Amino acid sequence: GAVVSQHPSRVICKSGTSVKIECRSLDFQATTMFWYRQFPKQSLMLMATSNEGSKATYEQGVEKDKFLINHASLTLSTLTVTSAHPEDSSFYICSASRTGFSPLHFGNGTRLTVT
Amino acid sequence: AQKITQTQPGMFVQEKEAVTLDCTYDTSDQSYGLFWYKQPSSGEMIFLIYQGSYDEQNATEGRYSLNFQKARKSANLVISASQLGDSAMYFCAMRGSNTGNQFYFGTGTSLTVIP
Image (cartoon, rainbow over all chains, first blue to last red):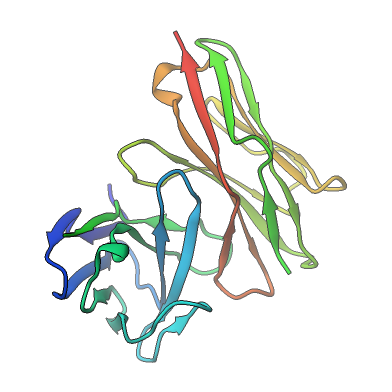
């Protein structure tokens, strides 16, 4: 069964609104979750590392105020795209891993379209 | 620094034939893990196979096997008896012992299985 659940799978919103994406680890407690963005036919681009109980670590070039990450519990991380613009339209995918060299388990992704 | 290189943007294979997808990596870590993921057009990332840097035998999972050549720093994925459903993007990834939980992904290879 699914190890990581991500919702919604698809969202269309108007420019200027905010969108929240949820990522839940179902089988284990994830102290760390990762948020990726993927453009068509490209690889995954790490946006930020979400740490339970502390601030997220953002990759260079990713706007903290635009992409708000909250990791309130060991099983839930949320990504909020604030004041969305058409250029934020993309595929966002979250992931979590157990410790050691366990595989990274991914949610099914969220396809965001900003009109 | 960690780096994953996939030099084949696109590959074609005849149904029922075997195909090898190349992956080379660069790391200064002594201990690391190598992973392959499949991403169909629907977007989800599916974990296929894992190889630990200290594993003496090549990993196998059903029709997938990993040709691990540590001295050459290569971790090629071999898919035997290709099926139409194998058409997808394939990503090689690495996780090092000194890089926390972070995964590094290659740019991916698009595989098309021809009937």
